[in-house]
Image (cartoon, rainbow, N blue to C red; front, side, top):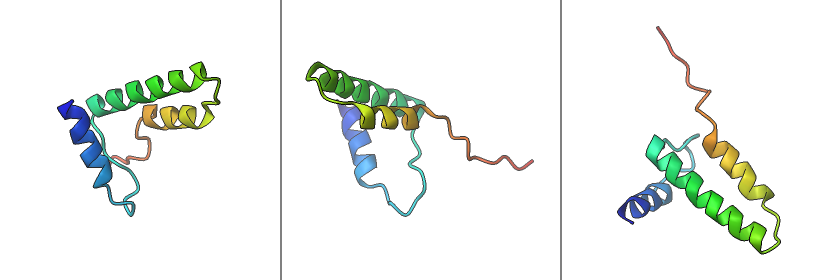
Length: 70
């Protein structure tokens, strides 16, 4: 429960001027689980889950825009 509260606080304090919200692997896992639960509820109710599916894919993508300068 505390992890969820900390994650919600992090998201609410996020500055939209930044391009990406940095999340840890544990936070990513927590977000995916929550989105999957929401998707299951939508499907059980006969609703479309297209928007949720798009967000799941975005959360699951690794950060490919990071450039390594060596």
